[in-house]
Image: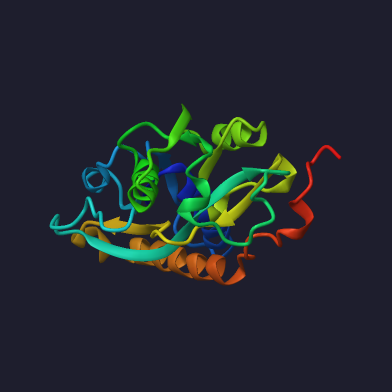
Length: 225
């Protein structure tokens, strides 16, 4: 059976799911990664048995499409800071603390750009976006180099090993939803139901096992000292 996924969902869920299914002699899963910002997740269900999609709060590109959707998890979006940043020792950040920062953003119209817009609305101040990139690892590298701060998904973000610190953001809805989309006739197939249940189980395990963001204390001095 086939699964289409955007990269970070595949990174979070699919290696463990495929390993579990292989060990249990379950269905063979063939993957295809797709642009997470295309927004055309519903159309992919014509060609794939399961489509892993994501959305920001208040947006559902698949609403009214007649699709089965299985909510897998809600992932917090954190603020990435370089180690040694003045805010690295703060346990939670507010929009007001961030308005004077340089930002590593995403292209205008991409989902994470909506969260940056929410920060602007909450503070009444436009953000200073110095770079816009689509790849989270490039964004993290720019943050680690001190070029700006950014937004990262908590479950797939790097950490001190790559020179960044992540902190939760309060005052706005900083999260995204990850779901499995299926056409009704495909959702009834045994193989599809088996894989969907494995995805649900891995999502539960991931949320239960994931450590909170780091204790601020070790990261209040520059990483090079």
